[in-house]
Amino acid sequence: MVKVNVGGCSSFVKDAEYQKYVEKALEAFDVLQSETGAGNDFLGWKTLPVDTPESLISECEAVRDSWKAKGVNLVIVIGIGGSYLGAKCAIEALSHSFVEPQTKVVFAGNNLSEEYLSELMDLAETRNTAVVVISKSGTTTEPAVAFRIFKEFVEKTYGKKEAAERIVAITDAKKGALKTLSTQEGYKTFVVPDNVGGRFSVLTPVGLLPVILAGFDARALLKGAADEREALLRKDAANAAVQYAAMRNLLHTEYGKAVEILVTYNPKFTYLAEWWKQLYGESEGKDGKGIFPASVTNTADLHSMGQFIQEGSRVMFETVISIANSNRSVVIGSDAQNLDQLNYLAGQHVEHCNAMAQLGVKVAHIDGGVPQIEVGIERINEYNLGAIFYFFEFACGISAYVLGVNPFNQPGVEAYKKNMFALLRKPGYEEQTEAILKRI
Ligand code: PA5
Image (cartoon, rainbow, N blue to C red; front, side, top):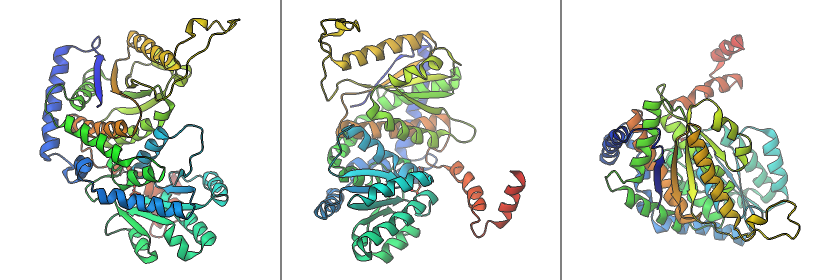
């Protein structure tokens, strides 16, 4: 289970203040649970861990097995934002960092870089390739562009009929361009439920199918999320999501902390931070409010961002992902010459050094004026990843309600699109094209 420790904030806040924010978080908990708050038609994610039928997992596994039978060894997952970050995070966390897997899962449609797409094409040309295209709306430009390119590639390489068996779409049940195209072309489709927003969709087929295709255990992911849900249903001050939501709102509202840095000491979790940034950034950053979500991966970033965090503008607090146990073991050896003077570490696990770095940084940053919340898990695996996904989602709902915003919309995401469409000369945007060109 996910554990929260707010002890690293105690020298910055008064206990009575924290209790006041716990009360606010408990009120927000009620709003979330009674489904009476803003955006309450997007709460389908709350019960995904217990509602997801076994048949959905079997359907995903059937895709995996049929592609395996064809010898597929490259799956291109096309999507952006909530339609890729959860899967990317899970696969990065669970995969071997260096050894090539049997089926490589890569991502596209999350940028508009021609070099990126062209280099991915280089890879696809040497592999046996299949495509998963994910878009809830079915109309997002970045994945639509990437899909047009890779659809053509798969059709040219394998023929139109075979291509239809190598493309799976995850989209709305009824509407959108991707749904229409899938029906027309006969693609296998999975549904993003209407009542689950993109950034809360990691436990739908959006996250589950890529995780299964990459060879990981989606049942364990869901079980971890289900057990975490069970723990978070308890309405009390010891509820981990309540504690996290209370402390981050207190630090923000009463102490002016405008930036939250998610800190990890394991590079496998760099994409957990990317997923978390979207979750909190899109859910809370609106109406002129919100905490800016940033991230660092230590110890690497201690040698880049460490200076700023220690001594720069005092605008931030840290949330550290603490992992109790490493899945691997490497012990530092002894050296007769000891020129590097590391013999004092001989016999120690590398992870012990990592833990001491984490502790040393904690004390230094607290001394430097940076409060620290700890979010702990036992080790990286599917079960704990499911738990941490659910924890952050649930805490996000509570936290945004404490802040006073609708956690489940993202009106600001639209703002750049009309300018981009106008500049790309999309039919219907002519007037805006002229207006924009006058300004640049
Ligand atoms: O959280 C969200 O809703 C967004 O980030 C979407 O996931 C993102 O814009 C992609 O949208 P779509 O799945 O409709 O292509």
